[in-house]
Every structure is written in structure tokens, then in C-alpha cells.
Length: 267
Figure (cartoon, rainbow, N blue to C red):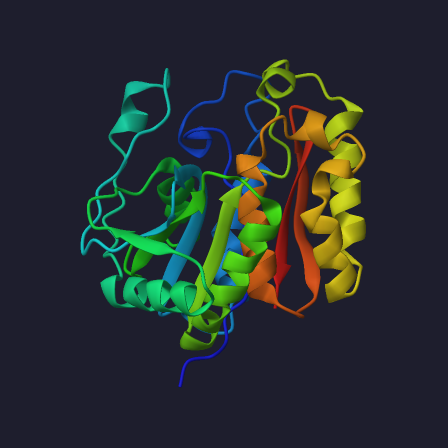
């Protein structure tokens, strides 16, 4: 019998940031996050049977699960060094687990679909190259819904929560702060830290109050400055829903170009 896996929300970085010489700011800007991602697998209770990634970089009219046997890579970043388009992550897909996701969604009244041709986008393969570099664990991806509603995505997480008891690690891959004009300005502001502090406070709440706060996240201090568009925050909602009543713990916090980034786990 598989051990129950956590669900975790991770910052997936900026493009292929972990695999290049970073010239925008200090050369070690991404090192702390990279080190945390590399060490994360050692904190798990056992080896996952599969990894399900909810990436900020896939939106669909219906919640859609990737069910190809051998997904390729989608290099959905632009203007980076040529070698970053030669990265490889040949992890097998997880069609049987994907079928289970569709069953769970439909049992909860959520329309689900499958996509056998979807490649892994960079919200998947970039962090997993650090977290599970051997690419020997089945990996599959779940889309966001294009409506971008927080409550709906929490419900998606609740629907797929039984996967955790099957040994599937649920990874929400986004960023706790995603305002590119501010970020690329490379000058720290209090926007990210204010919103990050709010997330940390939410983590300290009981499950019911925590859910209410996350559903109404846009009313938080500096929320719409931290996330002018919410696609990079919604993977947190899915992992929170999948986490159920488990404690929400901030398992990483750091600063890149003066902006706070954090990871949160439910176990």
C-alpha cells in the first residue's frame, strides 16, 4: 500500500533560470530556490508512484489532464540562451493515473477532459529537472480552467485529493509573486513581501478560515499588484484543496531581485 503524499505549491522560477548564467542581478539570484527544489524529494515519506503537476502555463476551457505515454517538451519561454532549448526530461507519462483524475473530477461534478498530445511545459520540466532529475517517475499534468476562479480550483484540488493516498505527489507549479514589470525592474518593493506575509498568515489558520481567505485572495493587501493576473497563484488553490484539513506550512521562503517567493506544503 502506498503512503500518503503531501501536496505542495512551488515557485518554478523564471523561464530556464536554473540552467543559465543569470546576468539580470546577482549571479546567485536563483541558487537558494534551486537548492531547496533539489532537496525536496528527501523530505517525502517515500518515492512517489507518480507526480501530477498543475502548471500556471496551461489553461483550458475544461479542466484537462495530460494522458500521453511519453510526453515531449514545450519550450514556452522566449529570448533565452540556445542551450536552454536543448534541455531534456524524458519522464514517462501516467495514463492510468490520468484516467483516475477524470473519474474523480466527474464524480465531483466537474467536467474533465484528456489530452494525449500535450507536452510538458516549462512549469513542469524546469522544476522537475531539479526535484527528480533522473526522470524515472511517471509525470502527468493537469490544466487550470480558463475561468481562473479561485473557489473552482480549490474544488478541483478537493476532487483529486484521493490521488495522494495512491502515492501521487501533487505539485502546484507557479509563483507566489508574479508581477513581471516589477520583477524585471530588479528592485525590491514591499508588494511581494506584503502579499507573502499575508499568505504566511493564511497558513496559520484553521482549514475552514484558510479556505475562505484563499477564495477571496484578491482582497488581500497588495494582492492585485502581486498578481495582476492570477494564473501563477491558482496552482496554490489546487494544492490547498488537495491538502484538505492538513496543516499548511511555508516550507521555503527567499528573495529574488528583492522580491519574496515562497513555497507551501500540505501534509
